[in-house]
Image (cartoon, rainbow, N blue to C red; front, side, top):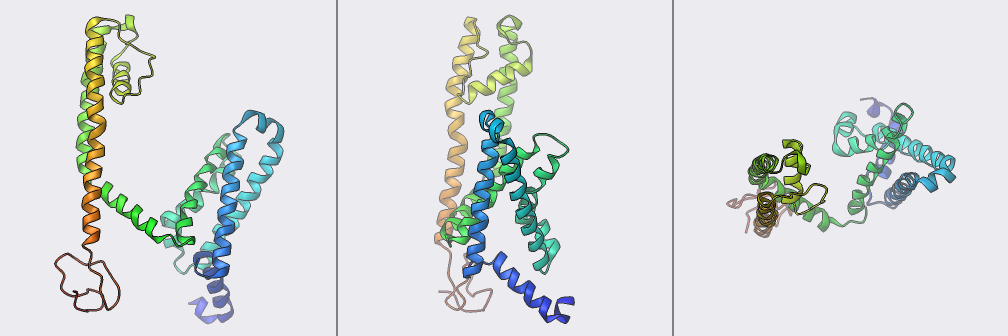
Length: 275
C-alpha cells in the first residue's frame, strides 16, 4: 500500500527491480555481468588464501578484498529485499538463501576461525549466467536431468539400501576372517574396507593377508564393477524416458504453452484446441 501512495518511491523501487532482477535490459545485464565478475574474483581470493605461501605474503590484502566483496554483496542483498514486493518470498527462496549464505561466512569468521573458506559457496551464483546469456536450452536440459533423478530416486534408494546391507555383511565377514592382526580392528573398519573395495577406489591402507580374505576381496572387487553400473543404468533409462516425454509435449498454437497432459485436447491456459 505504501508504494501505491508514494509514486516516487514506487518508481525508484521498480527501476531498481528491473536493474537487479531482470537481465533483458542493458542496465540489468550490465549489473548481472558485474556481479558475476565480482563472484569469480571473490572465489579466487578465497582459493588463493588457502595456499600457505600466498596467505603468508598477502594475508592483509586478501582480507581487505574479502571484506570488500562481502560488503558489496551485503548491499546487493539488502537492495534485493528492498525492491521486491514479496520480501519473505525472496528471502525464503533458493536464490535468496544462496545470496544470504554468500555473505554470512565472512561475518561468522569473526567468531569461528576458518568460516571464511565457506565463501566458495558463491560459485553457486554463477549458475545465473544461463539466464543472463539467455542460454535457456541449458536450463531446460538441467531441468530434464533433475526430473530424471527425481523419477529414479526410489530405485536408487532401494539400490543403496542393498549396497549398505552388503557392506555390513562383507565388513563383518572380513573382520572375522582377518582379525586385528591384519588391521581389521573392528567391524566399522571392515565396513570401511568394503566400501573402498566395492567402489574400486582401493586406497590400500588396509589389505587382507590370508587366503580366505584375499578370495573374498577378489569377489568383492568383481562385484564392485557390477554395482557401479547399476545407478548409471537407472538414471540413463529415466533420462531416455524424460527425453521421449519432452518430445511428445504439445505446444499450443494460441498461447505457446507446452505444459499439457498427453491426453489433453484443449489448452488449459487459453482454451485453444490442441493439434
